[in-house]
Amino acid sequence: MKIKQLLAAVALLMGILVRAQQTQDSVPVQQLEGVVVSDSRFPLERGQSGKTVISLQRDYLDQFPGVSVARILNNQSGFEISGSRGRPGEVLGVFARGGRGRQVLVLIDGIRVSDPSSFSQEYDLRLLNADAVESIEIVKGASSVLYGTNAATAVINIKTRKAGKKSFEVLAGTTFGTQNTSEESDLDLGNFTQNALLSGSLQGFDYRLSFSNSFSNGLSSLADTAGEPDPNTNSSADLNLGFEIFGKNEIRVFANQTRLRSAYDDSFLQQDAPYLFVTDQERLGLSYIRKGTFGSIEAKTAYTVFDSENRSNFPSLFKGNNWFGDIALKRTFGANFQALAGLMYVEDRAELEQDKRFSLLDPYLNLVWTSPGGFNLNTGARLNLHSEYGSQAVYTINPSFIQKYGYGSLKLLASWATAYITPSLTQLFGAFGANPDLQPETNRTFEIGLESQWVKGPRLSLLFFDREEDQTVLFDNNAFLYFNAANPISVQGLETELQWGLSAHLQLSANYTYTERKGDNAIRIPKHKANVLLSAEVAQGSNLTVEYSYTGKRRDTDFATAANVELQAFSLLGLRFSQQLVKERLRANLALTNILNESYTEVLGFTTPGRNLALGLQFKL
Image 1 (cartoon, rainbow, N blue to C red):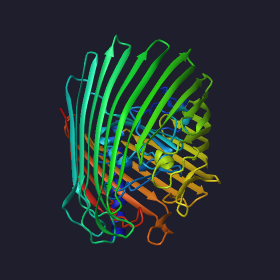
Image 2 (image 1 turned 180 degrees about the vertical axis):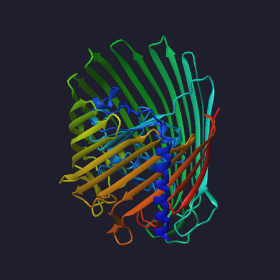
Image 3 (image 1 turned 30 degrees about the horizontal axis):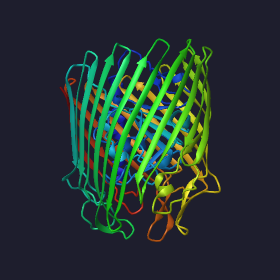
Image 4 (image 1 turned 60 degrees about the vertical axis):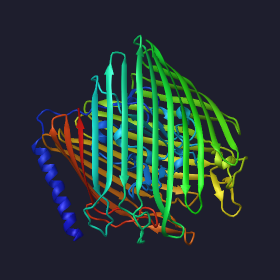
């Protein structure tokens, strides 16, 4: 049966290629390099950047209505997010370049959103709805010079939706679909998402108010049990107001409230249970930008409250708050030299056995030189001044050289950068194995690679990276204590990416990642991973996307025996179709995931979906 399904998928793919070639425009297509920001905090042409920055704009995200941000990130090179392909609401493990979640920093509109009350100061990606996102930029490697603690393996820079250009606009969408395992074929609906954005622009003022909600109730958390489905509900509301004063000053006020309710089972005893994880986050912030002839001043601050609870046989509460502030002066000297000087302040607080807090104050400097001859340099340094352990200095050196030809360009790049990770309040002062003598974890990343861009053809990049972690914070189960590891952990890998506009109506993107982690068990980190996305305009207003992903073998821990086991590799094939019903007003979507109904294990003992169907509508007023 699967052979027939595979042949049908191949035939479908060939049909897309033929149809897209038939509808090809006679005007030659020129791929633009685009502009990236996150690797320097200055807008640079891609050719001037010394990184292989991943930039996901709204036109890319529009291909995945109702899909989580975690699932979208999982399809990018260098990333493995365990749980993103499982039951909605399952706990996520974020692994970038063979690292752990605490080594990835998430920014939303320039604000750090790490949870100080959690064990590892991570942001819970389950809280973010992709329909509320305008763009995502990903910079891999050590980036603490620009962004501070936790920016060791990757920075995920997320910008929320822009306000409409008219005085009043409405964007809204809904998706609904089945939620079956590979052993089921029901048409009962078990997955729903809704989102709405009200926005507009007037003279000197813009506003946007967004709402999103998702609900799923089709799958049990644990595999191989006859338990009841475990529902998951996630809702979010955002408000953003922008004021332009005298044409050079912009003040922006923003607020967010997010709630997550996710049921789960007893993973240790592998049995059905009425457990529930509840989390509420509330954020209020302010930003200011003053633009001048030779540069700008940018300041932002935010206060966030975190409140989470595990309702189980081992109940726990996690409460905390965070103050974040950053002010940066950007200055341009001539046509080729830019400088950034800034100061960042963070104060984290958590309600443990006693209220505990720490603060850090970081001055930093970054310089960018883009020479007319093709040589570019991005370099900088930061000094972390911490209230508990003292000071920590980090730096980065990122040269690149681009040679342009008549048919395109070839860029050579290299980078040597360091990063640091502050121990969490729970690790320093919590009730479970706290150690106030912990030192910050340090990371070092070396990269070397090349990127080739053809004017009328593909963009291809190949990059080797080498990471080393020192003083990694680990937990000793025998001594029941957090400690700094005596021996370093090293990770080497290879990343390659391909972007190719095969015609005016056909776009191919693919990536492959090889990751080798040494020094520990490398739990849930595959050595080999690949993704392919083929998007085609098969007719005017009709778009078809075929997605394929391969996840190689990796190890996981069996909690029943405390032994590590090997998980088998698996492949997933999906299909997405969208049809414009009313020009620029109404669009319908269809998604068929796991077409071949693959039975696979993503996290040992947990349920994964089989073949499922989803339908949706998006409209604009």
